[in-house]
Image 1 (cartoon, rainbow, N blue to C red):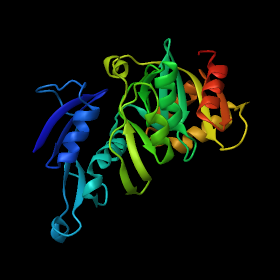
Image 2: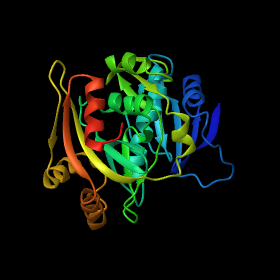
Image 3: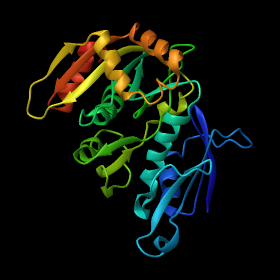
Image 4: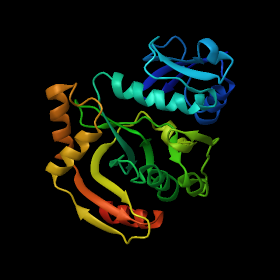
Length: 286
């Protein structure tokens, strides 16, 4: 029976489960995380077998956080990715004091780039490429966590979520550690790439937002950079925000302050190499 407590910055998470696949997932992706004793636990997560006949026929996995069950069960062979999806939901919905929106965040030389996560944009593949091929530090692949008090972006370095063809692309990057593939999920075939050690070791270091880049993958097309107005960027970021409305005026002011400190662009590209070239062009960092 798995029962462990992990510091997954900036949170402390307790995880309990009888599933060997969840234990293997944590050992592969979270082996370098601190395991604090007697620390205050932000989120108490359990992954448990399904109830009733599903314990024996088409076994299922249930995700519980603080004894609440926010999701329908999934097939038991998807228990490990269910942990990641469930933790995303938990952070997005229960992070008191932070504004959280769907985006990858990476840092270099103290400045952060934000890549919002619209479907099919190629965010995660680009995020992994920036980490492994261009030396950017991963703050998060899925969740931008903004501290309204400081205006800084908080690190939450966790596995990079990959889907379908991006799994093989990222698997060829130098030093990439890609885990098990999960077939026939609601997102297709999924896998995860482990964050690099520097992301874990420097997870206590926030970053100042500097660039907001909306990626758009367009196979077979050319590549280009286009400016995005702050007004348009605010609307687009609002669509990706999980709790800005719930935070009311604080959330509104935090996003306004964020946009007042970043350059906003959209990049359209047909390959990972094109995307890296465009990001370097915008940020002027190789």
